[in-house]
Length: 154
Length: 154
DNA sequence: CTTTTCGTAACTTATCAAGTTTCAAATTCT
DNA sequence: AGAATTTGAAACTTGATAAGTTACGAAAAG
Ligand code: FES
Ligand code: FES
Image (tube, rainbow over all chains, first blue to last red; front, top):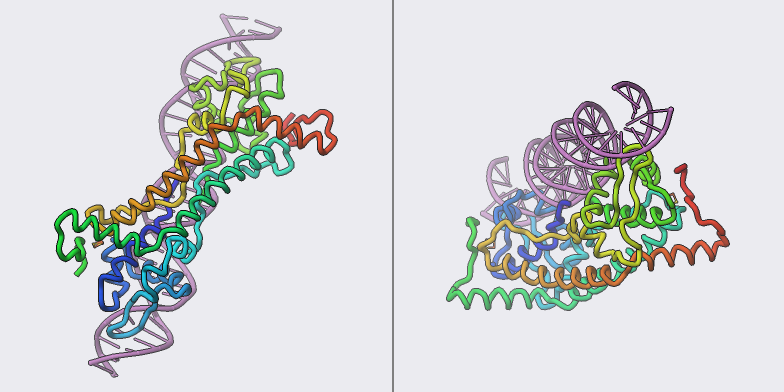
């Protein structure tokens, strides 16, 4: 099953965004992610609606954080990218009136819902500043002074 | 994202299989699921390897339970259909050497792993006989005497 | 008014479970 | 033995959709 990488990618983008003291263009970000500007705009649009980033058009424009990383949780970002389906496992709906299918789906749904609740609760408990701190710790452990981009974006 | 309905469908099949006192052909099962025999064989093949069902070829052949429903858990069936990816959410791997991506993926992986552990533990705790009992209760609540198939398979 | 950059719509691609086709092999029935 | 039934398995097509692409208009700055 194909993955939905929007949450992961947007988290990556937001953390890099804080390092920069200037707006990042969609093209720069696309280079970072190995994709293209239109997709970046499409996905960041959701984050803009939530106020997590702001965009400016024209010369010198681009994307900047709309609030500190300490005020954004993983859950916020998950919701902002459209609250995509968490699970690849799905329920059959071939025989909706079949009591067996109903019993199976009921058990699966309860279990999936419980796991989803746990997951989203954990997401709500993690702030992006926590990820940044972890990143900083990793950089320090490697003896990196100025963490800066390690990819080919410049 | 597209769902993987193999677990749900195979549970449905196994429960119906117990009701029947005869081998069910792939064609019958395909009719139940609104699909075709080859797909049924492909998916049930995994269950056969685990000994959860047995198949007989030729006239009068078909599929039967290989052990009582009380000795099969949802986790068993999940594994038997290939232990498909649980989550639709995936991790980016565009910049494996990027410390930010590493920090993001580490946090996501830990959280997803925790939710996966919970899910699979719940699966391991649910026996197919529990689902059958729930099914029987639903049938009783509706006043059904002989639960039998409600779909067009006969 | 030219350049930069976002905004957005429309279209194409990649992926993989699901679905299909086909035939060989095994088993039973006559 | 031969016909009918049914699984086994390989090869192929379809469908759904996140990702990727193309194209052009609007807004802002120089
Ligand atoms: S993409 Fe994270 S360092 Fe460039
Ligand atoms: S499919 Fe469950 S009753 Fe026919």
